[in-house]
Amino acid sequence: MSFEKTCTLNTGATLRQIGLGTWLSKPKEVENAVEIAVRNGYRHLDLAMIYQNQDEVGAALKKVIPSVVKREDLFLTSKCWNSSHQPDLVGKELDETLKQLGVEYLDLYLVHWPVAFAPGRGFHPLHPTLQDEVELDDKTSLVDTWKAMIALPKSKARFFVRAIGVSNFTIEHLEGIIKATGVVPAANQIEAHPLLPQSDLVAYCREKGIHITAYSPLGNNLIGKPKLTDDPTVIDIAKKLNATPAQVLIAWGAYRGYSVIPKSVQEERIISNFKQIELSEEDYKAVTALAKDGHTRYNIPVAFKPKWNINLFNEEVEKTAAHNVNIV
Ligand SMILES: NC(=O)c1ccc[n+]([C@@H]2O[C@H](COP(=O)([O-])OP(=O)(O)OC[C@H]3O[C@@H](n4cnc5c(N)ncnc54)[C@H](OP(=O)(O)O)[C@@H]3O)[C@@H](O)[C@H]2O)c1
Image (tube, rainbow, N blue to C red; front, side, top):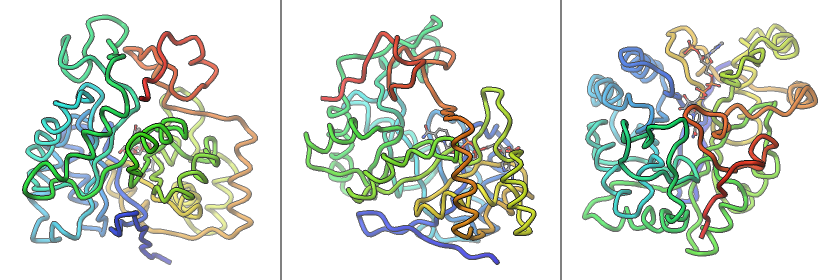
């Protein structure tokens, strides 16, 4: 069975539960992937300046708007990169994103990480460092950046951004920006899969009306562990349901009531990932039980190259980091 569920933001806007991720989708690959996705029913696309492929996404959008889909029927999310957290840069980077995509507005704009980099220094403006370690900006707080995000929709004659949110924020980070501004983010995009269910954060966001989008739902494995799509339990359930292991993992996220953004650049996978299946409670519990095999967070910036020397999530490996998040 294939059906297309939607989720609703605290702004009243709706988005499809399954979207297309675009991180690590190379130029040419991503243009093709986005076109295939939209032609096959995807309406929710997850983008970001740091993916350095938004111009290719823009080229694909030109091919499908308006011949396949109207702009207003798409839900486009993009994200403000860490080197534009300084309040005077937030709007400038948004302008650049809109230009790259060739659209007049975004449906959702997120603060990509709760980390400010020094702006525009070093060999690459997105990674301002010449060293093994990124140069951080300890002076710009999350609240400074969040206030600049809040001002975006109001700062121009038209609505360039329909909703604002965050990504990779913990409960503590969310509490800090909400307490200081009274403005609740529409969404928090976080890593979530059976090895990192983040149940406390999911429950907190549900209570506050913050929509969760789960990234790396297939457990995008950049650290050499076995892939979640190769897990025997996931494979068994997939066989039983005549589904793919990826569909089971996507359905696990959907069962929890949030949106899920699997990435693929392969036509067959793009199409099959979008075919939504439903898990029984028993199958949901069996996949949830994989957590006992070991808590795994794939995206820990202190382990990135270049390293971000900051403790974001209080994971063991982050405890000796030299910086903490400047919340207020
Ligand atoms: N906010 C953030 O900080 C953040 C961080 C990470 C990711 N994200 C977003 O979330 C999206 C998804 O996360 P992700 O890319 O890390 O990981 P993911 O979607 O969990 O996994 C992607 C990997 O799985 C493969 N794959 C896709 N469909 C498959 C299938 N049906 N069977 C087996 N393998 C399959 C892909 O390869 P092929 O392409 O070759 O199919 C790719 O290697 C990203 O693209 C990005 O948009 C956001």
